[in-house]
Length: 128
Image 1 (cartoon, one colour):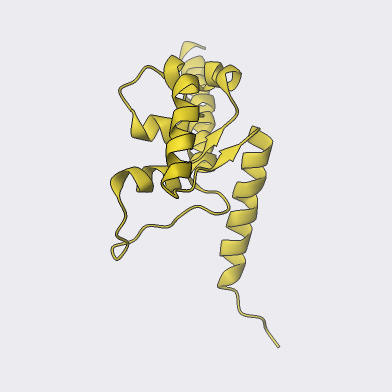
Image 2 (cartoon, rainbow, N blue to C red):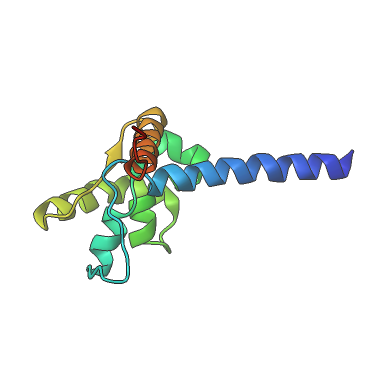
């Protein structure tokens, strides 16, 4: 029973973390980086991540819902991300950098599904 409980908790935790990382980095409008892409480090962190929700959600996500802030300031305790967020948003605005924010997980999840659907369909050839 103990082993089953441990396996179940790892499975649930792994799925939860995997989905969280997926929706934070795969969404409609995300920048794709490849070997030819030259982008400033800070700009790359902002334009390849997204932030979702607010401080309340951060309690459940351990601050990982503030993915942009987490990438820019990985050593700051996550309880400070809600304070840092408006500063980062303003900096992005002043420097012409895209800051992607989703008000809810559902908005973020919808954007991820839309993005994946469009990417999957872009290579499909229609059969006559």
